[in-house]
Image 1 (tube, rainbow over the protein chains, first blue to last red):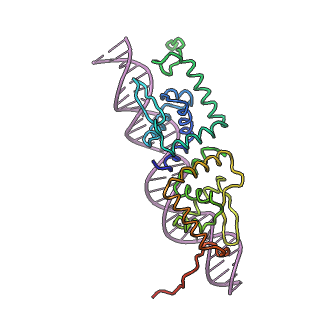
Image 2: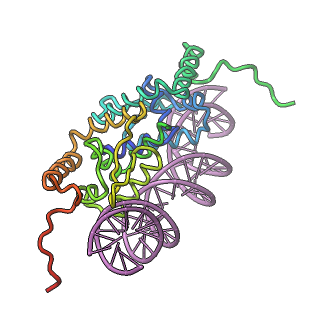
Image 3: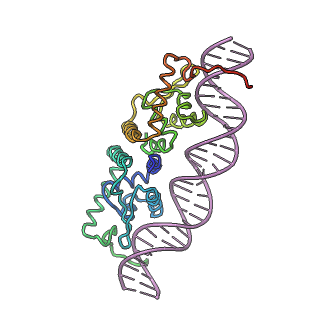
Length: 127
Length: 127
DNA sequence: AAAGAATATACCGCAATAGGTATATTGTTA
DNA sequence: TAACAATATACCTATTGCGGTATATTCTTT
């Protein structure tokens, strides 16, 4: 994998946030949606971008797609992910992303099959 | 300086090579030209790209422009430059660039005012 | 002042990218 | 099998980036 390609993957805010979240462990698309507060299409396309370039790995789990960092990242990728984590540690957005993720996970504890679905408030039809 | 902007600067091969060379010390445009073997315009434009984003610093020296890394790089920039050096250490192109630079400097030893001009072979008009 | 050297910029065309809307795909559930 | 849920893709548009040619700028030297 070319070093430049790694940087090309890193040069977008959304992708940076995605990769940073992934350093916390595997996540499915809806996780990104709710943490980043970005539309599904946007998230999905950035994930595709990263996937086609080998920066992330995708695996289907029923209806959900679970994304993760490669099991054995190249030296270059590993180095840059470490660097990213280092830089992100002092950045508001990145830190808040992780916090949101933590909360999300706590709320979903045990709700595995529902993935991101928060305990649904009662739904009613419109008036 | 935004982290993303740093990555945007890093996501081009030529700029990567430029930055990597600069970790060896300040250089003027003609140095880059002859080490990278790229046309003046190309080098100059990439340097401008880096300069307007604060990744490099430029200073005039007579006819020459001397480029260097900022004296006090931000945490993020420092981290990424270190990472780049680390990655470059195992890459052919980057290593050869440094070798070329070393040779160039040896050849020019003492030729300060002429900057990059190699000891000119005798020039003749066409046949 | 004029010529020349080193470097920068303007402008152009093309390819790549980001984001949006609409729609397709794939698996699950009733 | 039909409806639904999660995700992906096609298509469109606007912007950006890269490389090239031609030209401008800024110093130096004569």
